[in-house]
Each structure stands twice: as C-alpha cells, then as structure tokens.
Length: 259
Image (cartoon, rainbow, N blue to C red; front, top):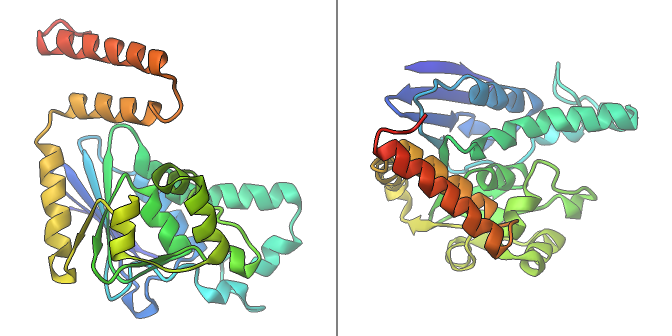
C-alpha cells in the first residue's frame, strides 16, 4: 500500500512494516524543507498496526545533506532559505527549526522500531537522519560526516543526543568538531552501525532485521524499548523499579488479566 510519494519521499506499507524511501537519487538525496515536511507527515500518517519502519535511499548515497541551493541568494523556490532564516526574529527562527526537527523525531517512538539502511554518503542532515533511527544497517561503502561546524553552524536536527549516546561525548565532539569521515569499519567498532554488509546485501540485511524484530510479541518489544531508552537517564534502583513494573504488566497480559 502506498501512503505518499512526493518531495523526494515515498512511503509504502506492507503488513506491519512501513518503508520510507528517499527517491532523489539524481541529487544524492539532498534534503530540503519540503522533504522534511513530508517526512514529518509520514510519521503522523502511519497506520496503527505498523511495528517496524525501514528507512532506505535510492542511488549511490543515502543523503548528501542539506540541498546547497538553500544557502544561495536565490534559495529553493517556494521554500525557506538560509538567508530568510537569518533575517527572521529569534522566535521565528527557532519555530522554523522546530518544524524541521519534526522530520527527525518520530522515528524513536516507543511503539515502533526504526531501521536505517545506509549506503554511500550520509553527510550532515543525512547523518542526522540515520541517527534518528533506532538501528543502522550499513553498506561497506558508507561514509558518515557531520560537516555543520565547519560551515559555522551546529547539528540542529536532533543528531547530537543519539550521537553522544552511541559513541560518547569525547568522540562525538571530535567527529563534529573536525567534520571528518567515519567509514564502515570504524562505524561498526564505535557503535554507529549495528551491522555492516556488502552494498549488494544491504536491502536483504535490513529486511532480515525487520523480520527478526517482528518475531517478538509487540507489547514485549514496546516495553523493552521503553526500558532501554529509560536506562540512559535513570539510576540503577530507579531502573530496577521500572523493570519490575513492566514485568508485572507483561505477566498479567500473558495470563489474560491485563486491563
């Protein structure tokens, strides 16, 4: 079933799996505000029975980052340009950026598990979109880089939190501060990539991971994901209390005594 197909984004659903595909391969899937609006809409419009979302990209690159036309005086026709953002008030600028961020926030909803299948370049906004997902399956040719700081900007699309959670503060600072490229072997070693496979096997590897996740009962996976997310901010005793409460719910549900 096709949900939408516009602004460089195609969304299809088959049973419990939604596939979000970036389809501007000729532009290396460079991102625009219109693409971000459509990605945010995709998250809002998913059917309730979707359990896994797979993010893919056509062509040789996952996403080369923000469309550079946004930085030109002409901008992208009909879309907010960097120059217009700079001329806006602080309140208007932060509101606009908050709208952009919506495209990057829904992938970690507790009721879903999201998988990014990443090949080639994942630069800037492309890197942050891959980081927005719960899991990353990467091709051997993957190249991650956070170039915002080198341009005088900051990563502002939700990428700083998951990057630090995955690789730690010091390494995240080094990656962002230098703008250097992180290739497949390093990405797997430091925790950016859950799995690295030959490019020809990328689609199948993402599908296999989705199938493995679907094998677990939905409510158990939802509770487990919530626990693991909470563990990054809660102390040991508080986390154990959350585990007890979650397990009590699961036992009652399995026994048919849940609410």
